[in-house]
Length: 388
Ligand SMILES: *Cc1c(COP(=O)(O)O)cnc(C)c1O
Image 1: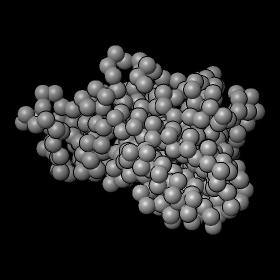
Image 2: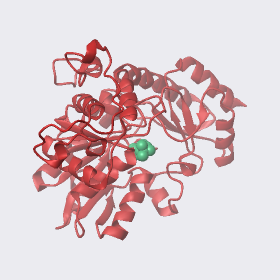
Image 3: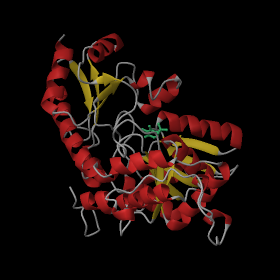
């Protein structure tokens, strides 16, 4: 699991210790919660050195961002009040009116909405492309292209693009490469090591992991993150100390949770693949999955999202979900509890038929986010629901 971590220290050690104050404050074993909006004025070099929550430089913000940067093997990171804010601010900071972004066709539904809005209101040129190889990028690149945006695994069909080729293409053309790593987490993929410039997360998902915080992250070079932090300060975007504190607590168990979730998802994906009432399973850990070879090349774990289509159409899919007693029907993912939803009613609601087709989403598709429950119990629950 840890063979792709280039540092000497293992990821579990990083998750527990990185960013924690040493020596500890008042001998506290845990970074205390500083519920203080402002701090005594020292001798600030600049306005951004004044410590104030909105300036993204108070103790809980600094501590959690240091841990996040260490986990992603990046120089620096910022936190935002949602994953959506992380996506929109990473984009707005790196694109001006008249400039062009190339986004993978499979990007998250919410991200598509942001991009379409940026095109309409800010004059940013947006195009979507499939990325099967570098040739697709070369073909789609324009004079005005500045940014390429991909995801570690697409939602919900778990497509994986040739990530190394995306990073190399951007380096060669002086473009900013961005990746939303929410689905893989740094446990399964560390894009900075592949050459990506900016790594984005919805920390509301695996990073916090307990479905009780909404937050986002952008990690990258000191220079890029400092530029981004100035934009956040300017526009008044900050994560409050209590959410930072909770996120920091969640992060400590990330490298313990994710491998357990990976294993649970593998067991359930195999069970579903064998089941006569299941038409199709999408899981990059299955040897016959079209993304399996890429998954093996880039990932150190196959993730905890399993998407499948029961036989019989959307009503049957809905009935299978209703028949589950452990997994609950809810949007979102990545927490310790197993959740199911139909993407057409959640993450992809409101997208037109064309965008749905491009994302590979169908009305009978069920997306399962596997938690940390005993996988045998989850599998038994699923079998009952499929056979009812
Ligand atoms: C959930 C999600 C987001 C948006 O994050 P929020 O924290 O809900 O704002 C962005 N990208 C991906 C891949 C997501 O799953």
